Amino acid sequence: MADLSTTYMGLKLKSPIIAGSSGLMNSLENLKQFEEAGAGAVVLKSIFEEQIQLETQKFIKSGDENAQQWNNTFQGIVNSQSHYYDEALEYINNFAKEHTLDQYLDFIREAKKNLTIPVIASIHCVSNYDWSYFAKRIQDAGADALELNVYVLPSDFNRSGVENEQVYFDIIEAVKKQVTIPISLKIGYYFSSIVNTVQKLSETGVSALVMFNRPYNPDIDINNLKLTSNYLLSNPEEYARTLRWVAILSGKLKCDIAASSGIHSFEPVVKQLLAGATVIQVASVIYIHGIDHIRQLVSGLNGWMDEHKYACISDFRGKLNQQNIENPAVYERVQFMKLYSKIE
Ligand SMILES: Cc1cc2nc3c(=O)[nH]c(=O)nc-3n(C[C@H](O)[C@H](O)[C@H](O)COP(=O)(O)O)c2cc1C
Image 1 (cartoon, rainbow, N blue to C red):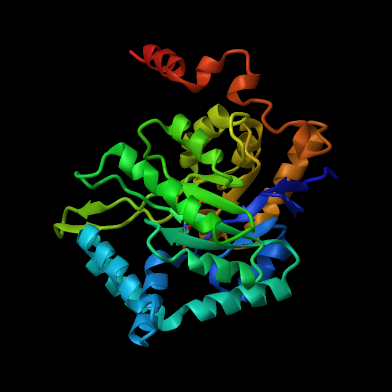
Image 2 (cartoon, helix red, strand yellow):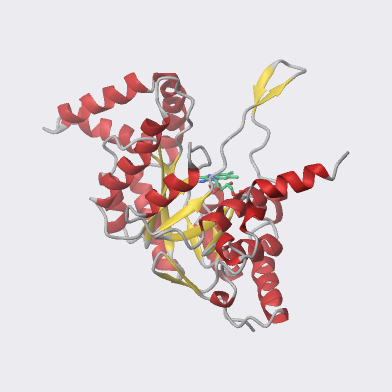
């Protein structure tokens, strides 16, 4: 049996397969099953920045002296992001009925009591407006690490690429002031120069970059002329997009890489590790096949390592990243030229 253990964000994992953040990560029973099935760590369902702000607003109404200062900031958010704010507020109001911040912290404590694998909490955020104090509460509740899913869709005509990208750096700076536990940053693809920005992000003191979160894509129902959202779960072809960037960035960053999106079977797990990923995160495939699917990913990886006589993951991690292959151009435009020129 090969040794699947690895280190991610300084945490010791028994396998490189992590159960990524999703609605399935809200239940202690599920978390235990993930551990039993062989997951190396679990990432809890995200708490939203707006939820934290909403709770803070309640605190303001309670008359605390810091209230006025916070209220000004909150008003700033409403003004600057009003196009999405109403909808977000409605969603969070509903969500907050069941999931308050205290419940989230209790859940971290419960998870820590019941699991031996690392528990990574998660915050979904779009700004650094006055919510970062909650990161400290997450740390105090016992989380082993904190994943920040920063979701900046560059759809604001008034914001430049530089301004959009600055948000990531501001968030890391604010959160790093609050905590000493490792922080990972979950990012999307929308950067004007992805490798340059990602490299700089890796130098901010984050312990890992999770590449990539999967943007929600709208769709149109042409029969009812309505907007829909059909593609909640990824499909198995999507892993290739992550693969390219993992391979190009591997060996060039000052932090670990968690590969995410479209990883549904053990083969792309192996591919991402060969490209240089430290760990793999999975979410959609668990909705499709159930928590036990983790066993198949783990045993598939194990079988492949045995077959190729690799005793441990570091024996092959990054072997096929861009800097280790003979023709680095295959990860770039030349591949496209070759492929398309064959098709008449
Ligand atoms: C139903 C569902 C809920 C999700 N909720 C969260 C979340 O709360 N926070 C987060 O960072 N990612 C969330 N994700 C995104 C996943 O963690 C993951 O980044 C994305 O789905 C791509 O990976 P996959 O192809 O393995 O699903 C969610 C995904 C799904 C399908």
